[in-house]
Image (cartoon, rainbow, N blue to C red; front, side, top):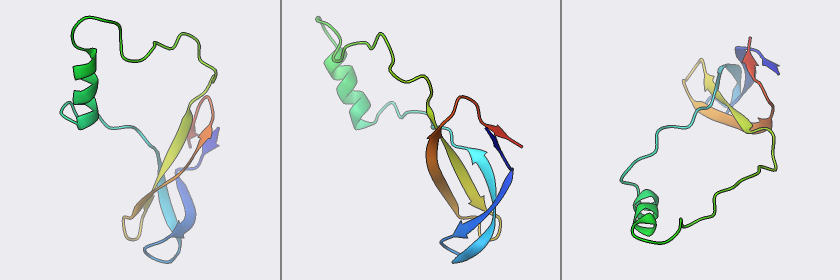
Length: 91
């Protein structure tokens, strides 16, 4: 799917339609000392199997990709809801 580099859409901070630059949302690096990560490590420790079963076959063929929109006027960033596509091309 082809998406333009700039989209004119509503900005909640400016309260008008302004041009936004479009980028693909990427997940940041996980924090090693986050509570969930520490809990997972503690449960994995010692003898016995893994806490959760390893998934062998996947039901979905694609992932949901979200767009990150940044207002050119005020710099406010927001995300557009993810859509299922195999490939996203920002033109």
